[in-house]
Image 1 (cartoon, helix red, strand yellow):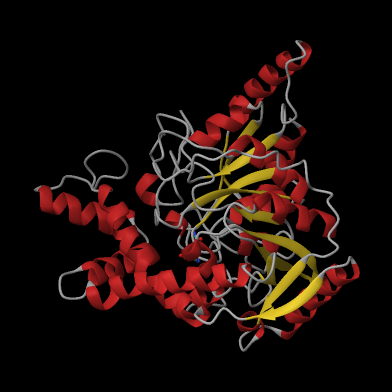
Image 2 (cartoon, helix red, strand yellow):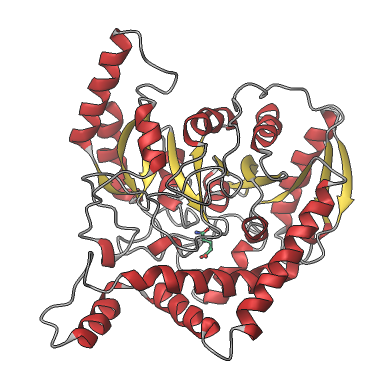
Length: 445
Ligand code: GLN
């Protein structure tokens, strides 16, 4: 309840929460207490946390940051919510986000932008900016985010916290409002890799309700956190240290890499030759999937419905014109265009071929090194309103997007400050290498 007080006091200035579930939180905390008295509490029992407002939470508004779902009360819990509840965690509410997770600054939310707790003039990053800001401001010790092209790692970097995007298929997507289904993945955001590891223990695993979730043993992510790193082979992709990278970010990242060298790691230069094609391929694939996923918001079944439609066409048109914000409309237009007859081969098929090549780049690199390291984002947090041009905003994703296209895991770890703004070191590993990534991150922390 002291955190609920703190949210009331601090969050009006940050806007990191869309919904605070005070009453439910107190009930859940009581239930956790009762279990503790019976001696049945697990390690996460009583842990307060918050969910990005993209995870369905039974009986609680789940808006995806959109006017379209402003009135949507989810009738069931997402699998991760269910699992974390079962582990005894206490949800304090739902965090702000870019509408339908489209964005890199949290300025695309129907509920207004989130401020970076380090400096209210700055964005927290996006699209899981509310989760990152809430953790950074000490409103919750941990929060869940989703990452389709960087939305856990980039806001974690901008807010100076740790954020893990697991391997595609490691965590169930059931009950997570879909943006681009072949790229979306849920992950933990917290202060440290150790905290992320504890959350992963509860979150990960196969789910019969998500056909893309992988049936594979879930290791104990906390077990190997302290393994020594001597002999670790770190690859530095040349493409991640080129033009467009802010010098102060490069300095901080190279400094972090030197720390690893002092711990006995060996650093090798590698190449991911198709890096420059990642953003174009992503901005074909993600909008294509989004245009299909978002077709369900038609004013008929749930969510916003326009007033007094004269016929079905009017209902569809006005509902969608009123319910979606500009960035979402832009993506739907791009997606329907690239999927339309006559353009499919030129755009969508080409993008899928590039996706394959990008994945191969990583597989080739991991044949030579254990992990890759680089910046999580090309700059530190920028000022609100600084990137009005969508293409400038899309360039934020240059170091994060390829990871989703390849399906591999990535973690962003705080690597000091540059001009009083946090820098994120990104560490990448092969498919299902989360335990090792957490180990590498933890030893540094
Ligand atoms: N910034 C990217 C986009 O707008 C990634 C967002 C995300 O990971 N959800 O699509």
